[in-house]
Image (cartoon, helix red, strand yellow):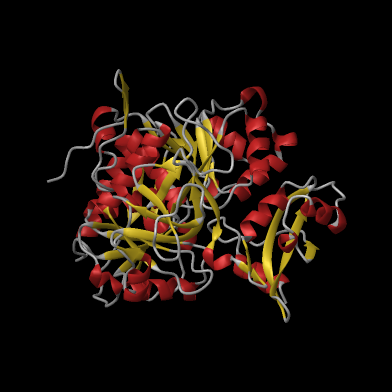
Length: 524
């Protein structure tokens, strides 16, 4: 039996995170007790949509989907930017008992079709920007219209949903989502997440940052990725806060601070690449006296170098908290704490949030404090495995533990520091080199904005170290100065043998460095 949802509260005994059972009841407490509180701020005109209004739209979508022949536990795709249509479709489908698979609208039609077919989605809900894309299953356009007064209506006319075969046959009505992993080095894996996974993730995120009805954020990260979905959208709505959805549903550095002020944002979360953009623009776009009431800023999904962290903290006047997670762990697994709630250690991604973390050697033995090994995670947010991939599931999920493929070490206080990805290691004559570590050093060099380190094939050593470096606008630093800086801070075998100055680096749709593209561009 479902447990009634409850809002986040602060009382004499301290903070209590919201009580939810999954996606279907995420809004219930606020619709019941705070119906006219703002839930979303949408469109370029920044129109407010209340919890009551959002709940009514989700119920309308659910009712229409139930009339299509879809059964509880069936999978449907969702192709949409960070707009009201995404939120309404997600929550409406969940209330109808369906399993939702968000997809990146920027993917070519061939990849969208491949993922939908592999999953066995019976239909796909599409936002206005994705209408007209040829897909292998029925595409049902959804439009949400919100007036200046906050009243809203939907346009959705779903038809019959054909029966199809695919990985969705492994799903049940206990499942809420199917998320696709990055897929930059091969076919994307399908990760099923239950309503219990979702609830635990939301509660852990809310608890880590003590989110409540007074908090607000701007949706910087895309919702088809766990970072934007769990941290920015679901945690905020579950805790009763406000989420501003930028115009056209995507991050814009040019309007970011206006958006933050418009919603009186108390925090935001982004990948390091976006933090770098904001830092580079800070001299001419400082929020100034009209700055929003920020409490903290969060960084996740890629390594954040300490130079950027310190610089942005000085610029914004609030702590920048690093977090760590994976799709397979329903996003967040660790985070640095809020000020006053624990020690902040630059270079660390904090302590576990609602899960257990251990570091093991190549034989599966737990490593001593301070010794590097593979990071493993166990807890209520961890997925049960991959869909239609027994081999991948057997390797990655071991006795309830998730093998992350990340290298790291735990200190005496239980704080986790990441040192790289196992598959990214460069083997130079037997010496294993972490590209992430070398990138962190390079990023600290005066005049360097960002860097990507890659393996260069070598007939003698097997591999050498190469680096593509972006220099900050107006700076004149060159390869010779960068190499001198590296030699003072890196072991001789870690110093790049080749440095190429480039205008930009390639990134994935989720905001992480696209290492496959870097290798193809600069390694030959």
